[in-house]
Amino acid sequence: MIEVPDALAQAQVAYEGEAGRAFVAGLPGHAADFLGRWRLRRTGPALHGMTALVLPVVREDDGMPAALKLQLLTEESEGEAAALDAWGGEGAVRLLARGEADGTGVLLLEAADPAADLEGLPPHAAVEVVARLLARLTSVPAPAGLRTLGDVAARMLAEAGDVPSDAPHAPLLRDCAAAVREVADEPGDRLLHWDLHFQNILRSRRAPDGGGPWLAIDPKPLAGDPGFDLFPVLRNRFEPDDVVPRFDLLTGVLGLDRGRARAWTLARVLQEGLWRRRDGEALGDREAFVGRTLLAL
Image 1: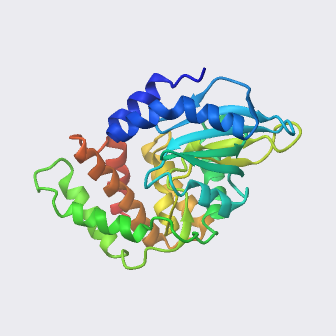
Image 2: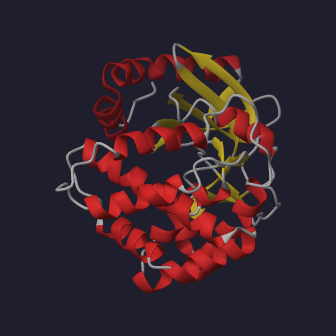
């Protein structure tokens, strides 16, 4: 029997409404179907975040460890298989198989070590790993059909125009929007991960001793400028004095124009502020500090 963790069920209903409720209701059946279809045997308890159920498995045909991932197909998640296929295991986990059932995307992925993410490294070393991975991942042109940063930016700028002047952090969001307008006509065409934070990078099991390279998991891909991918690591294990050194390290390793990277990172601050506003909340202190710091550069 496959049980859906309460936290995943609650998050899906809260964020996706009836579509999330239907997704949760169908998960046990869809998981059982693909376990049988792909001849997989479970090897451990279910893992989950806010959007997906992940079952550790082995393939019965060859004994290969893998991860069976099931998630609701949304604008953010529907491009994951195409992104992983484009990366081909270079900097990200390999895609082994893909399927779909009633709006649920089903992926069979290379198994990485869920207990070994970048939270276990000193912050500077973790940022260096992220920088090297981003340089590799964003060197790949985005495959056709992905959502685009141009569309994302256009929607953000339209919504930003409706933020009243007395809203929390309104001046900051206005300044972020102004920075985005300066680069919005050149949104880029690289394959972006969008959510490359410390917990979305796991140690590979490719080497016999499990000490393989670091690999990205769980992309929410889009086509755009690599500067849009820097924000998560600026607020991971947040230290105010680290914002500019981290930004400089990332832009240096990726070879980015500092001004454009600044503008696209401010786009992420704007995005976060607009999301919080929809939920009736103010922009968080960490995000606001990152925004003010970059605006001052």
